[in-house]
Length: 416
Image (cartoon, rainbow, N blue to C red; front, side, top):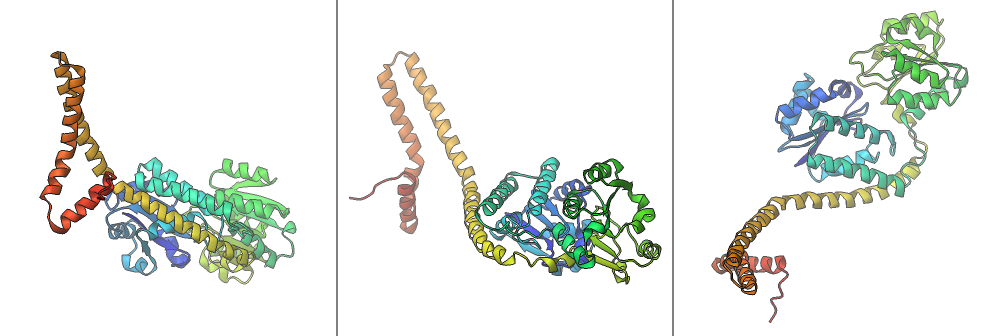
């Protein structure tokens, strides 16, 4: 059976989400560890700033929850109040809704689809994606495409990046006069850079662990690149800081920002921390001259276009409901595969046996017409022997049920 379990921005605060997040560099190890534990036959892990979800084919989700607790060294009792678990068909519906952007902080945002595809790619590379999950995710991507092409779910999108720009414009009259520092060079930072740099800031700096990758992004916007270990030297030169790395620990601490504010003579700084776990220590937000926002804080700016998106949600949910039914039918059809295979194997054995018998008769000189007639009669008798015997031996309601099943299976007309 397919299960989905996890936490997201609806069920858990950031302080809990960051404790069970999986960094990209740890994901394949986690997938291998989970399958080795035999808690699940198939598994994929989706871990973003807003959610950590485990999609699996397993007997029960309980062993997977225990594994999650052990892996992150968090007591099960600490995360249990925030965990949700879905089995079929809700697990299927949840995957379709997530891929379509209906479960996102910003309804209809497209970034989650790319993140889900990355999760599937990681599972494929780790060898943990079996037939059921592969089909589930392929259907999820297909449903997302259908939703986006037939509804207005993508209209007036307010992405995390656009929300960051909106908040910055509340602090500064114009982004055009500000110096911006982006920390990291991943997909989220690329999106933020595109949105912020569209406002033609005064200067752009990319700080990244790998200088070459940071330089490649900086060159797109006429900026410069620095190493992460140079942050302390350059932080004071920037008015806006946007950070999103995969660091397991904060890379900007309270002391660093206090020194920065002093060097800036208390000119305000706007900081956006999109990382989970956090890149910027929580206490930084308590400083008078710092405006610090996390992913949870961005929810307040998701108002524009909500009415049109909500109308589209109703249409999208109808599409998803139908596609869930279709996928359920596919899963149920798989239950009959072993029986069909066994039936065909049995028929094939009969066919081969009778062919050998017929060939021997031909070798002996028997007339071909007689051999073919003999072959057809023997095959018919063999094919029908078991069902006929079972029908004759059945009694009462079982006989009635078998008769109806036989009529349906062989398209029989039993009327007088």
